[in-house]
Length: 113
Length: 112
Image 1 (cartoon, chains in turn purple, yellow):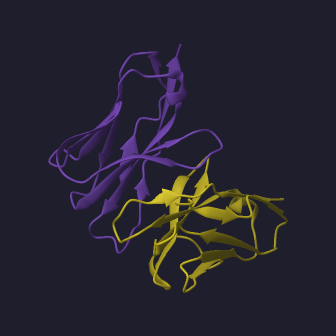
Image 2 (cartoon, rainbow over the protein chains, first blue to last red):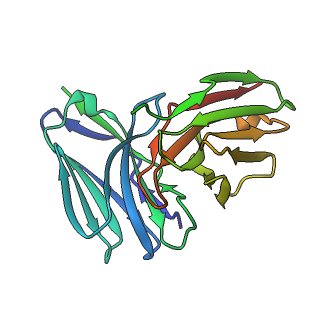
């Protein structure tokens, strides 16, 4: 079983709609959760971090964490064509020494005008 | 603040050669992590340094090594290059342990 799982997509959404991305993780001892956006040929860019259960909003982005169900999600409101990218979920496990980020495979999002 | 910088941005090497990649973290950041990204395996953790000490290592062969200097700059070295080492090598820095990591632009290595 993969440690961090994401649907590879592509997730196709019309411009202005809400894109909903999900990520599940296998280790209940996970501590820190991150969403990164990666455009083709570029490096990952941090969107948001979340550490406790509930919702966290930043602009058009909302991250939701549910540790009991072991999932973290990302909502993108009013999706724009510039949001077309691969979205990576990453987790730091509390058992891991240091800062090892474990990444999911990424979900490719296509926003159609 | 300036972001994470990596040099060189692109490299072409042949099998059997060795390569050294460099990473300068964001000013004040003491932790530097390295990742390899390939289409088939995705993003995989290589190793992490904090205050010049390797704190964590991923499942890569001993041909992959790294170090961190007193100014937090880090280098990684790959010896005896193989075709499968062709990848985007990413460096990320963070101020503390278990803190948010910020990625550099990466070094794209092609092994012929």
